[in-house]
Image: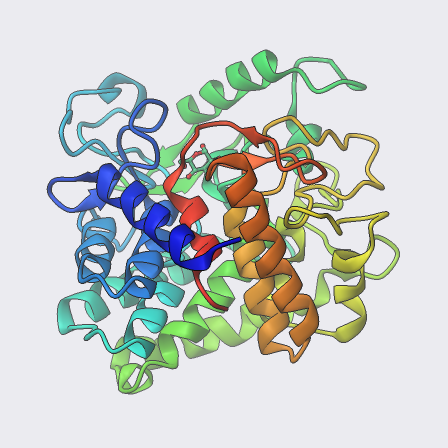
Length: 383
Ligand code: GLC
């Protein structure tokens, strides 16, 4: 593994994907628009490469923000009319994605980039929307209103919502139909921000972990904690933190979702993102164990203990570079240095073997999904 060569490869993948007015398309064929959390990860990768497009991409990720603070998960910059009927508006989608801009801003700041007033203002507004405008679930979590909001849309965590009647088998086509129907049932406030969905409201453990982590990261940037809006959000943040800590389930070895359906407790990698905010040493064990998530090529996206585990199917078992990165950050910060390095190294091995794929088979490194995909570049970022 030649690190200099891998960095050059990442730089050329990002260069190739660069699109005006200032973002990377995740893959020009499969994903030719802007995605929110992808762009935050690209910003971190640009910063690792010492390229000023780090700031440009973070700014463009937040540029389509609504008055409420809501940030759409997709922006169709160069084709505003595309999917207008589907989303009920031009230019953007009507749902969000994990708020990775808190961590991205903090990483950029750490690497010497200035997070200016406009960015600070947009980020605090985005947290204001998430922490204040979304009515909490019965267990006090922030709900997501669509599986796409989690970033992990075909995860076994949502199988309980599959209305297709296939109780024993996941059917990708039926689930696609259900996901479309779940866009039709979204409820919006006057500026077009989503505020409810009778068909899907879930206190997703992964999403809530990322709200907490990203808010903490944002607050760690000098000066941020003194901003009146940020100060005003501290009590919501504290309450969410207390509620989040309480959804850990010892028998399930994971943080469990909260919803009106049976609680999603499938052992998934995103279900362990709570390690970023509540890092108890024993909870890292399963990331090492080859019987659960431990793999040669990053970490499996679903534990091998799950009956639904399928190492080659989208969100049903493959290894994802952005989750490997986040779990490595969690391990590094918790002082689990060996695990952090192993996750980083094995993810890099996966990125290289797969040709910088969107995701890959955790046992063989075989590339899956779009190839190359920009966020695989995260594998070169030191955690
Ligand atoms: C897939 C992923 C989603 C990602 C998008 C663009 O839909 O599930 O998380 O943002 O691709 O890469």
